[in-house]
Image 1 (tube, rainbow over the protein chains, first blue to last red):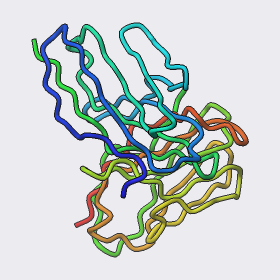
Image 2: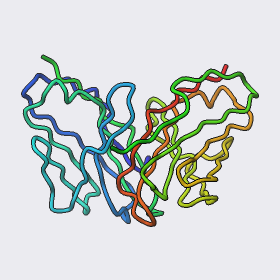
Image 3: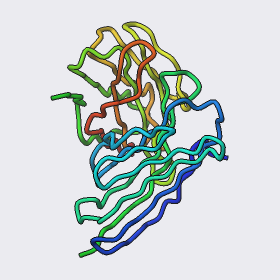
Image 4: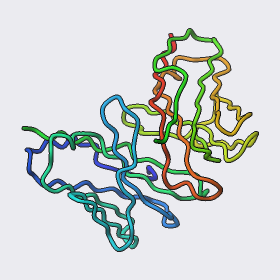
Length: 110
Length: 114
């Protein structure tokens, strides 16, 4: 079983739609959680951290459920510029190591 | 603005050649990382370093070695390149000591081994 699992997609949604991505992790001792965004042929960049209480950044909302070992990312009012691959990332084991999911591809259509 | 640079964007090498991939960061981070990214497999950690001359194996170190002689520079070495090492290689740096939540990535080197 992979340490971090994501639905690979692709998700094709119209502009203005709400879309949700899910991610599960296997290590119950995982300490920190993140969503990274990777544009086509570019490097990953941090989108947002994920906190137990849930957190929001504009149109993006991240949730963490430690009991179910589950992380989610909700994007409201999708824009064309949201088209990218979204990577679920977990910090566990050695505090210096991040484990990346294989990513969920999103395409927002005009 | 944070900056992680990698020596090449594209590289083509032959089987058996020695390959050096260089990474430089200007953020004074103690921690630096080398990943490879393959379709369907995501990013996998090859090696990381948390200080000059220190290194630790990641999940897939076989066939690779690293060098960290200066804080800002972390090199990945393929002693004898093989076709299964054709991949996108991403360097990252992040944090000091035990704090490494945000990692900043370089633009990547797409290596093809023929």
